Image (cartoon, rainbow, N blue to C red):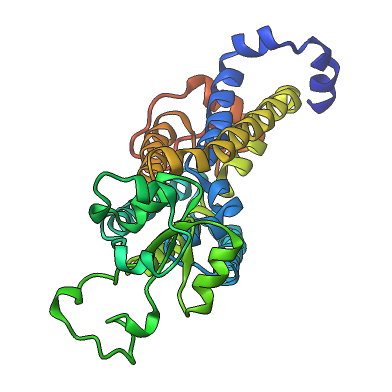
Length: 342
């Protein structure tokens, strides 16, 4: 059978490929899975995890880098788990469990970042006046009294936020600052010009310097959401698309279809990774993660409708299964295969 398929491989063309029902359906399923794998935001999390940690309110570059290494470790751990679950659970069911977890994690990230944006510390004119390099946008503002850290950072890339001294923070263990009005909010800071001199001045006064995110009480919630995202993603959507692509195409179309799927995944990777930082600046980090969550919900319906279960299906049966395939909303039930008669 393999020899016959090899001999006829010269006749494979894009038009014939798209006209063949089994191949076309397989291409929809395989390529679609890989596209959704990228558009739920996995590589933005992996590429920009230090930035995301800083957006969550952790100012130190070293802390952000160390915390971002945890995501890489969790990704490796999840991939090892998939070795056990991929055949035990099934490809389709594992992908759906993974996507439901991803939706939950992205919802958690959306809420955490939205709360951080809404409750960022205010900018104090008194704190700002202690420095000689106030941000020009703050000086030119009509109503600077309403400025918060988030307003300062979004006003201009040349603005940064110098947070209040930790020792004066009511949440600090050694603090004697007990006023009730500060019990549920962070202390005001200064909106200054963002450069190395200002950063050094801010640090010398035992303050934290922020240029990406703001001080937040919800930073740890964002980190937990980030960890859950990786834990849910890597065993399912991190592995299943590649396994399905290795099983779903008929032998003589496998090379061409694999090439198409591989091209699609890297184009998707390029689009998502290049647009992530621009999206966070344009609509905010919270709404960016919400967009990824909406894509993950669409991916759930895509998997239910288009992706067949290939677990335990012999290679020669896959083509027949795709040709005769109808919608199967009870995805946990194993589809009948002609090979089971024997």
